[in-house]
Amino acid sequence: MPLKPLLVSALATLGAASPLYHRAANETFVFTNANGLNFTQMNTTLPNVTIFATGGTIAGSDSSSTATTGYTAGAVGILTLIDAVPSMLDVANVAGVQVSNVASEDVTSDILLSMSKEITRVVCNDPTMAGAVITHGTDTLEESAFFMDATVNCGKPVVIVGAMRPSTVVSADGPFNLLEAVTVAASPKARDRGAMVVMNDRIASAYYPTGKVAIDVANMTAIPRVAILFSYEDMHNDTLYNAIESGAEGIVIAGAGAGGVTTSFNYAIEDAINRLEIPVVQSMRTVNGDVPLSDVSSDTATHIASGYLNPQKSRVLLGLLLAEGKNITEIAEVFALGTDA
Ligand code: ASP
View (cartoon, rainbow, N blue to C red):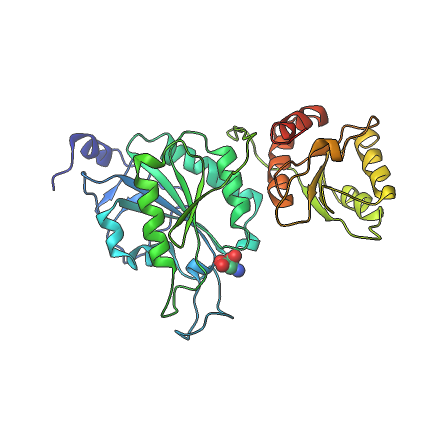
């Protein structure tokens, strides 16, 4: 099929490839867009989707085709993952960007910040792009999905996808999950829904409750360190002071019940807020639940309740708010948007 004039002119103005872009030496690309994204197909009747690969089990590999444990996560490159799903090219023209190739525990704030900016630059700001897919390990997938939901704010779909079985096993689930993720990212119906997680025939929202915020990361260079501390009987106050002395600029408590800590630890939280000016968000160690402000508030300090956000999502939000330069009162106001009284 002949290329449309717009695409032909884009062909003539090839941009310098970013260091993020992965190109296999033997790969044949038929089209490179103005942002340096390489496509193995350019069917102008189809939407364009960029897949950002970070690693995880979906890119896992093992020498045994029956190994579902003990494999290496983040071993296979994005072009191999794309090549494994030829039917994807019936749904969209896809370009692959290798952001990292790690197990998801090793995804960092730096990786997320850089990837978010890239998605805005090469997907949001390019009218020829329909959406983005991120391949990711499942262990910390919700943290990255939440980060993208808060920071990519153009209305185009950002779809995060993982797998439970490595790419080399006979029953790998990654290829079908990837096909479904690209299908969602290519759909106009997926616009303005925030970041989504697609796996196993399901579409989930990265941000479920109310109080969603949009954060502009364009001028951010780093996300301040935030520590999560787990609450338990006999919890010692020194864990809080040690975290702050080690460089944490914000603290999230995985509190017992509705954000609870020992009476003594609660005094330490108030000391951290009032004297050290460190924001402390009280979340919950239960898998699901809500921390209402009324359960953690007092007259002597600006307590912050996480509402429905679990500790790992609270950590991401607190880090982004600190990166914006917000003070404790302003941070408390943002978290209050998602909390019951
Ligand atoms: N350890 C893997 C990861 O999160 C697990 C997975 O992807 O399912 O990277």
